[in-house]
Length: 467
Image 1: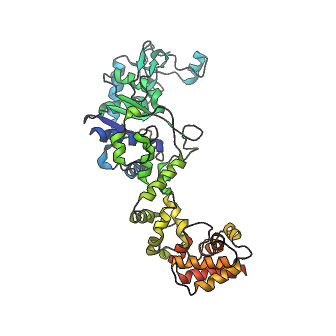
Image 2: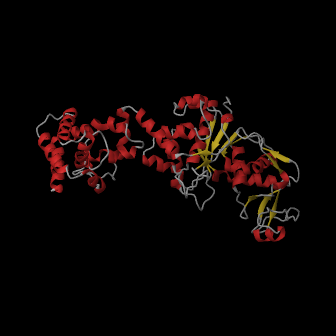
Image 3: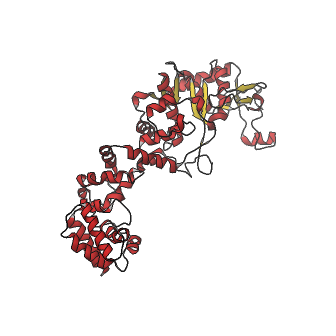
């Protein structure tokens, strides 16, 4: 693979959010280009005018940059619509060589002749000699015999019987090329040597290889990576599954974790490792080692990966990474109530307890809210019959004791023991009174940061409610 002449391409359509399958494809292409010293081309396949939107183009660029693939890492973006003249020239060449012909058959006519909805086109217009005209599509004339062999670095040599490949449409009635032809012509013009894409495109490969050969060019090296499936082993669907990279980013997944995880969907590094430095992935990855079987996109495993990556950050980097969530317009506290020093004081504690960055908000909101979050279930669980007396004793002790976490803990431990309660039981009503929740950061470190005045005020408010 070490060849500066190697050219791969990532060719998304700007018709929606950035699918995690697209993310895996662009990473495979990018890694191969980096390994070889070759080039990755970004081609925006924008010829579907009815569905394309400019913001989706920007979404592609933003998603790639978030993954670490900035403008310096690829050639482009190039736009398929700018290559219309090359598409027209290819159509003319195929017509002149007798490899294409016009057809005015509609689907109903084909079904009537073949007697089946499942059979392909029957070649009816092959020798009718029709010329360009309204409602006449252009079909490629496939060979009647022989076979087409796809040399695929992942799948070996899938072989397709030419007699079973119908004469497929390559241009619409208005003269515009369909995906099959435009894709091939663009790859030829751009000098693409390796086509790395998802398995769902494998059925297109024999048709496209026939087009390459008919246009007098050597086909690329084909690579069809395994499809991504959900826990039911169904192909990921944007209508059913979580597949938008933007959604994972907004939830607080780190790009490094997402990138590492996606590379493992179909490939595994040596030594039973899963989490490893990006440079190691680039050094070890081999297309020949990609498993052709469907790859399970396991969101739970991705979440665990992300938690590991979060814990591996320095505390300073973690604090910085949390800022978009802590300073978002959607936070439940007043913007001016956010205290950077207070968050820094508990950041290391929070870092070990979250798996995605968005979880930081409910983890630390008690520090910045005027009153703790209202959770009726938590209140009912914690505020048992002995809670008023215990809280009253805690208020009295906390008004004067030294304000350090270990002292606060020892004080509550003593108060609980006097009532036959272990610390876990004794701290439950205190935690809910102060933070509003039954779980969260270590309690005594939290209230040390919250401060005596606010802590005692919340304990008194809980007592008032109980009375």
